[in-house]
Length: 327
Image (cartoon, rainbow, N blue to C red):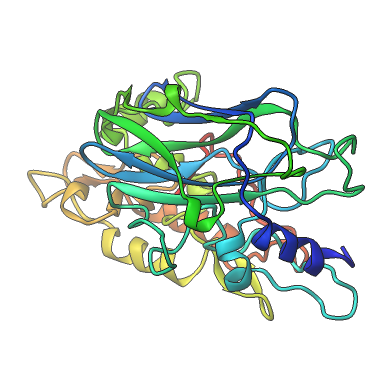
């Protein structure tokens, strides 16, 4: 990690190259899987603009964070967000954590040349790879083909990818190699959408039937939702440590607590994101007094994970709830 600053600088300022790279979009149910393959060249970084012809891009998932390793190869360095979220020890060069809230490949819409971001019809994605040893034959280098990430759409749409040349386009480890970028299979690709109808949880999941019954809320696909993480986001700071279950989740829980279903009350659907606080994914109450989705069992789940810090400051909350959606 001692050479992290120099390597990051080379990633940020390397000259863009027209690479022997094929970028494709594949419909994966309601999600768009963005993949790459090369003719043998190694790619150092991608800067891509992704747009949909209708609806919005509401989530990104299935990307890695941090250095590429033999066990977890890929593009986990996000240049546009590195300085905002990653803390590097000035003495050792070590990174405190690769998992702070907000550290994703989606460029901030305020960055020069970046699109509107999640919740709009277009995002800019920046992804690079750092690994040691640094040669193309390194066992830790990303493979010459693979999945970059998946996108969740708000509705069925066609997805188109273009190079963001202003932010680097495609950068090879050897920028002197002449080649072309093939986007033919990443242009106007039809992807079935509607988050409410998406199989963000697999049919084999034990809560699948309940998830369908309550309208397939996207938040149930957050990796730690069933453990008290209602919003899918981290809280805290690099100095104090990060945690997934805290005051923001308590705020959502408090608004949804014991909201009775009809005919006794407005129902959980009347509370914005209220179903996200149904951590136990069950119903409480009785036919006599009324039923509600958020109650004592959910409070117990919240309490069990309350302020548990993520590594290296604590054991962390397991991300084993069955989904992998990143809000």
